[in-house]
Image 1 (cartoon, one colour):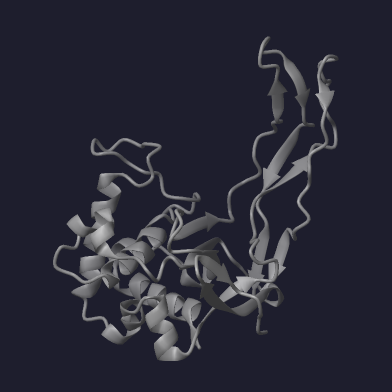
Image 2 (cartoon, rainbow, N blue to C red; image 1 turned 180 degrees about the vertical axis):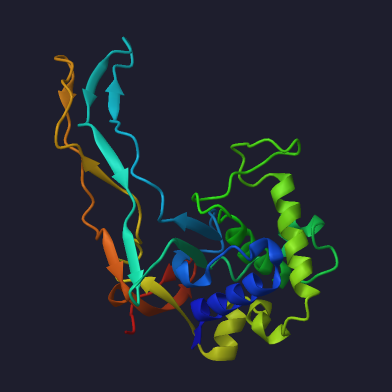
Length: 268
């Protein structure tokens, strides 16, 4: 079987070395893992998760009466915190996840990326996705990069036209850098093609699969006074770990049956 996340990790390392706009990324602080994502269903093909975000400001959930607009229930006050991921004694700052087989099956003819790469085959869409996720990493180590509009101002639109064209420029710079084509050759095959060529596709996942490290809520030890009319609803705390090491990673085969993605077994 091909270890897909190992190939993605090697490609990212090569991109960081060859593309100046990505040179701020510390490859040793990245961890690549896979999540299930059917090609036939909607959803992201990849995501970048920052683990260095500070503890949030306190807040609470609340429920309002539909007719009166008055608060009827609320949760305790809480903050959110980032989990810790430590691999080989080194703290991981960013997780980059890829949805399989959805990522493998990208095609330019059904994507807005066609205008960016009219002269390139479908694997360019996948290379674009990898660069796109790396470019989310902020050069000032402040979490995720602030998106900017055409006027240069920060915007809440993370995937605007300017961002997409900047990523496309980095893709072309990488391809013109003299990089060994074998490093990105695995992108040339869709999921079915990888299975035919390698006998199967495996990828790194967490033992909590399909869950993965995410921010979690922590109720405040000292709660502010509550309005007497609002009933307090306990927060449903998630029963997943808040600290992970290499012992929490497994290499898991991915299979496709109809429209369903399965990954039933794992390897140490």
